[in-house]
Amino acid sequence: MHAASVILLCWAMIGAACFFSQALTGVTAGVLAVLVAMVGLPHGAADHRFARPRLEPVLGIAWLPVFLAGYLVVAVVVACGWFVAPAATIVAFFLASAWHFGQEEPRFAVGPRCVRPVFRFARGGLVIWTPLVFRAGEVAAILGLATPGGAGTSGGPGPAIGQAMSLLTGCAWIMLVIAAVAWGLQGLTAVRRTGRIRRVLLTDNALIASLVVLFAVASPLVSFPVYFCAWHSARGLERLRIELGESWPELATSLAPMTAGAIALIGLAAWLVLGGAGWNGTLIRATFIGLSAVAVPHLLLHGVAPLFDASARRRTPPPVHVGSPA
Image (cartoon, rainbow, N blue to C red):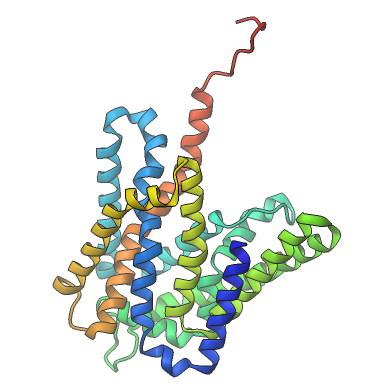
């Protein structure tokens, strides 16, 4: 049901991009900010709830200070990277994001086991690879606005943006080919299966195709929030809600303070540090830097979480059944 809803949303936005593109350009910055604030930031604001059951058994009462300190240090390093080494920061952030998105995508037994991680990386990065190939000018312009000092002497993107775009575009072509192979293999697998498995695989393939078309025809300021909020963040929040055993109102209430704090910090940065580019430029720059600063510790946390889960399973003694020797 969720995948079908996202497919419908994708085609609605594709139609809007094709027939009402001029009307969309004036609201893209606002759409980005509102959608990320409502769904995207709560996804990251849940990290302390996600981290506690994994860190507390190891660190005891020190888990929260260690978690907050580590989060803050990584966030500050990433934010400084935009000012000190923008090209390296852009490339690292985009590649790390593609890896994280891929880890959070549905996992189907498609293709040889040894290449499935590569397939996941290619799929997770479709929101990055597709605009880099089909809307390179817009991506470069957005990065020019988002990166402090990113504009060149002629008003276009500076050399740092050019270097990052060259590296990422080369990677994008390779990853799009790999993603297409994975998509084709999944379609062949679906044809050979029956019942619910076939429906799930075909629906997932339809979702991938719909997202790729959206990424190719719509502005990244529209297509990225659709993917990040409607698909990635919504699925992450649903998994956390099930893990915690809470209702949606309970989860929303618990995440509200952290979400409000993140919005306030991004707004403060826009006014005090990043101003001077106009509201569209300021919103884009503050959103990019703010999101990357909280996204990198978020993806690192989710990346190491399986290690903590495996450690917890090793520390848990096997159950002793009644009548078995102790």
